View (cartoon, rainbow, N blue to C red):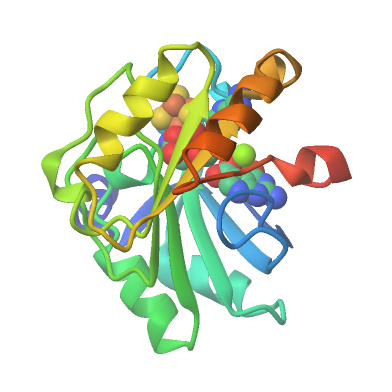
Amino acid sequence: MDKKTAVTEGRMLPVMEAFYTIQGEGVHTGTAAYFIRLGGCDVGCVWCDVKDSWEAEKWPILGVEEIVDEAMKFPGRMVVITGGEPLMYNLGPLTSSLKSKGFTTHIETSGAHPFSGDFDWVCFSPKKFKAPHPSIYEVANELKVVIFHKSDFEFAEKHAALVNEGCKLLLQPEWSKAKFFMNDIVEYVKFHPNWKISLQTHKFMDIP
Ligand SMILES: C[S@@+](CC[C@H](N)C(=O)[O-])C[C@H]1O[C@@H](n2cnc3c(N)ncnc32)[C@H](O)[C@@H]1O
Ligand SMILES: Nc1nc2[nH]cc(C(=O)O)c2c(=O)[nH]1
Ligand code: SF4
Ligand SMILES: [Mg+2]
């Protein structure tokens, strides 16, 4: 079997790392989860906290069965597929295999590529560096906007107007600017109570 074709079809994927930890961000903060971090991203966020992931070629190409077998070794049944940008790949085979084994499937995505896969929870974090693909808006369960500049509040509202009504709205301080923007974010949420604050709690806990 040709590896390139298998990756195109989503039967094999470049895996940077996979680890069992606590979901540190967003609506499901505090829940035990197995993270699968796929290699490759073409979005190029200046403040990305996992720039090492960008080059897909650096990471081993693994078969979906092998990826799922590893996940099965841990007691938690929530899987978070992240990256890199996971929607660069066809996530159909990986998510259907995970769901057949009883996992709930979550994704962390910028939405910059067409949506694929069978997900129970979609966390959409749009970026100014590469516009989202229109397919993400109707499937997003959570809109999580990183605040790095004061103009990001307006950017957040622009995307909030495009997601479904039930979509949860969260503002997350960019890690290096968190102290600088914390007061602005707190005041924003106090006066726009349809938004909540998301913190990268795993960084405070010093866990992966
Ligand atoms: C590393 S990204 C990988 C998934 C996908 N590429 C994305 O951006 O959503 C995972 C999450 O971390 C957020 N993130 C990345 N760097 C960050 C930083 N320096 N401070 C706060 N959040 C950050 C992203 O916005 C995203 O919600
Ligand atoms: N603990 C933990 N929670 C996370 N939530 C989203 C993450 C990501 O990088 O996608 C992440 C991560 O890297 N670690
Ligand atoms: S889209 Fe995600 S992985 Fe890609 S550069 Fe931005 S934060 Fe990093
Ligand atoms: Mg992270």
